[in-house]
Image (cartoon, rainbow, N blue to C red; front, side, top):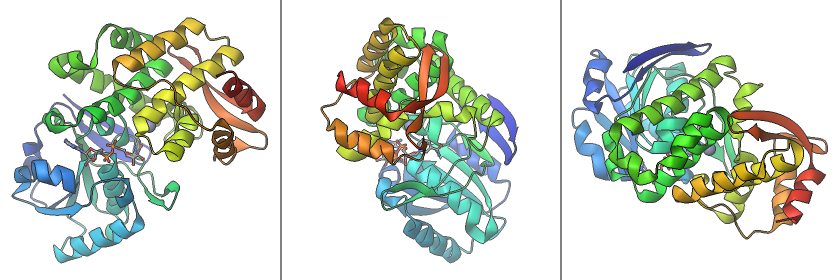
Length: 340
Ligand SMILES: NC(=O)c1ccc[n+]([C@@H]2O[C@H](COP(=O)([O-])OP(=O)(O)OC[C@H]3O[C@@H](n4cnc5c(N)ncnc54)[C@H](O)[C@@H]3O)[C@@H](O)[C@H]2O)c1
Ligand SMILES: [Zn+2]
């Protein structure tokens, strides 16, 4: 399926269920430079023989300004010009970097994204946000620029490690919690193995998540209001992700359970929903709690950019499919943590 959506910052062509070989046609005669990380290169570089390929080390550490500098040198060596098409093939690390590089190389060249992780397909490659880190400051330098196209070729997922599947499902479960009760029920009835074996169900799931993200971004590309809902599970999640160095999806899973517990107190969320969510998370290989230093987690929360004075904007659930943004006093969060 193909879909074109126009956002304030640009028009994106969504190519679902499409082979990577389509890049030749998409380039329309332009020079193509592909960027990928070392893991993806090892597994898939043979599919890009025709093109110049720039390879960066895999991992979050590559999301740094120094990588933008190295890639810029690489582009200059290939004589890339304003008419070059840059293609990012990889997980969120590569698509975030290529989004920023494409925005600033020669003040902007066309770029397309080919997400190769589940998390990239349902989240990172979609929505136009890009950026790199500086020290512990995550995504501190970046822009919102939409790619020319996003190509979804699920054959890349055949080589994806199991843990990365779970990480992707954490974000899928997030969309279900905040927007889609029917998806929540489907996830409860099915399993990771089911989606790995049933391509049609899996493609539908990816397309639904992309549709939810696009709907949100269309309304609020610059995250002044509704786009914030996508941070469900991410406030506490980011704090423990940094403290424990655990995978993002694991941190978000624990953060979503925490947000539900706070919701029980604040919005009157049915306790049964929190239990249902925990069952689903476990089914998809995700943790639901962590032994942590809660005082330290509170310290990190107090430094969060969503803080104003003694409150923090927290995403809570009223029910499955109905999320709200609520300024919460830190004392309410502390209170919930102390009862764990
Ligand atoms: N811009 C956004 O809106 C947005 C949203 C969510 C996350 N992100 C960013 O995305 C990043 C996380 O994305 P991610 O989880 O995809 O991480 P990632 O890019 O590091 O990929 C995870 C791992 O999978 C490997 N990999 C990628 N594709 C593979 C394949 N097909 N087969 C085997 N291995 C493969 C990678 O080499 C890496 O080791 C973070 O930096 C996060 O900040 C951005
Ligand atoms: Zn996330």
